[in-house]
Every structure is written in structure tokens, then in C-alpha cells.
Length: 192
Length: 153
Image (cartoon, rainbow over all chains, first blue to last red; front, side, top):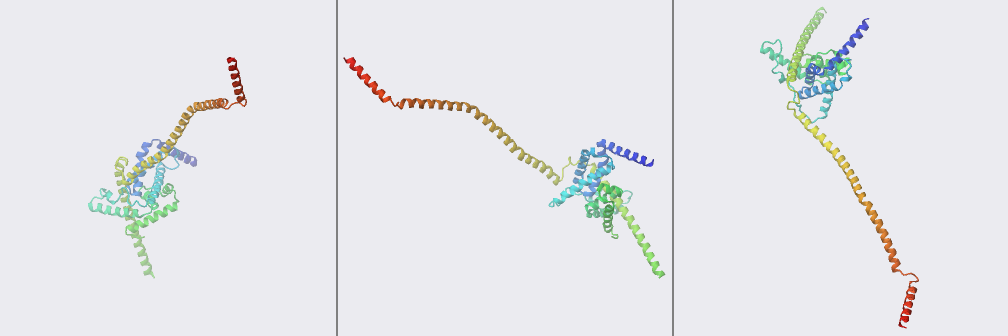
């Protein structure tokens, strides 16, 4: 009985996801900030992140007939974004003469950011310093470590969802996350 | 022995406290990082789309280079194809043009040949005397002489 109910629920979820895709303008409106956030924090390049976000939705639109709702729409879109980012990084590494990034995002971009719950200017400065440390540490991570890190700590995905999105084993995801955190702890002045 | 165990336990507790403090700091830093990234992403999302803005040099280059290369490629492919097609048509037209006057030329040549053959034939018949022509001429001359004699008489 429970099995039938579970199957029905799964079918209902699939139908809902497919239905959600029907209104593509709404899909773009809802998921664009999320995809942009992921690409922005992974690539730290505004133009590349913006372009890949657009390409991601273009690809999703073209492949919308293939979406069966086996995963959530968010996971599906993030998977497209991850693949696009992989291609982008591959092509960028081929263009070895291109030393500078188009519109690099740096710590200065958070100068106008006011952290929640920080009432005094000192505590706000302290918070910015902490973010700057994390920022630098994230910049040192490998592309895969960064993707896993961003999906976990920025997009707050579950490890299983990350594994599904990136197309990795759960143990590999855990390993990347462990290494990323080890680097972060080291930069934050803690133990490795 | 007992003192040693107590010291170990104290160290362990201290390291646990340190690690839990460290974990709290780390969690806080990550939370702040998430908030900062969200702020940056929101700011970016609020900006007009990349197409409306002045693109970065690399993208500007791509925007210029890609259509330029596509145009060059199109020219490289289309122009020879068109010229080949045009040339082919020209040849066909020339052939048609050539063929049209060729018909009378051939007729003319045929006529000429016939005329020439007739001419040669006639010339031959005229210039080259028949084997008995000299006798005939002599006969003629004898006949003429005889008739003149008769007239004299």
C-alpha cells in the first residue's frame, strides 16, 4: 500500500516538474538567480557567469522535451550549468595566452555588503575579513572541489543531490568536500 | 599513571573545545560567505542582461571574430560555388550560342563542299580534255576547212 502511494507521489512529482517547465518565463525568473549565483561563485567572472546562465536556459529550452522529471528542475538546470562550466573551463585552459579574466569578481565586490545582525562597524569589518579569507581559500580550490563546495555551502544542496548533479560518486563528493574544508580550515588559521 | 590519564583527558577536552570553537567559527564564516555571495549575485541579477551591457574584451572579440570568421567562411564557400555555377551556366549558354550558328555554318560548309566539288568537276571536265578531244578538234578543223573550200568553190 505504502509502495503504491510512494509510486503515485513520484509520478505526481514528475508531472509537477514537467508542468513547471511549461511556463519557461517563470522558470527563468525563479531559477536564474540560483544558477547565476552558482556560476558566479564558481567562476568568479561576471561576464562568463552571465553568458553561461543565458546559455544554460537556452539549452534547457532546447532540451525541454527530454526533461522527464526524474530529478528536480533545479537539479536538472544546475547539471546543465555544471556541464557548461566544465566546457568553459576546458576551453579557457586551452586559451593559455588569455591571462586575465574578462570581468573578474573579487572581494571588493562585497564592500557594500552589510552582514545581517552586525550592528557595529567593527563587527561588520570583522565579518568582511572572514568572508575575504573564505573567498581566497575558495579561489585556491580545484574546479571540482569548488563546484562541490559551492553547491554545498552556497546552494545548500544535500550530498546525494550534489553527486547526482555533478555526476560523481557520493564518496568522491565527500572527498572533494573534505579537501576543500581542509584548505579552508588551514587558511582560517585552524588545523589541517 | 593516574595523573598522566587525567592530563590526557584534559588535553582531549581542550582539543574538543578548540575544535568545536573552530567549527563554530568555520560555520559562521561559511554562513557569511553564503550571504555575501547571495548579495553579489542579487546585484548581478539586477543588472541588465549581458547583451545590453558593454561586453568584456574577450566577449567583444568573440562577438566580432565569430561573425567575421563566419562571413569569411561563407564568402570562401559561396563565391567559388556561385562563380562555378555561373561559369557552368556561361559555358552552357556559350555552347547554346555556339550551337545555334553552327547549324548554318555546317550547311554552308556542306554547300561549299558541294559547290567546290561541282566546280572541280566542271573545271576538270572543262580543262582536262577528253582523250578523243584532240581528234575531235582535228575533225572540227577538217570539217571547217572542207566547208570553206566548198564555199570558195
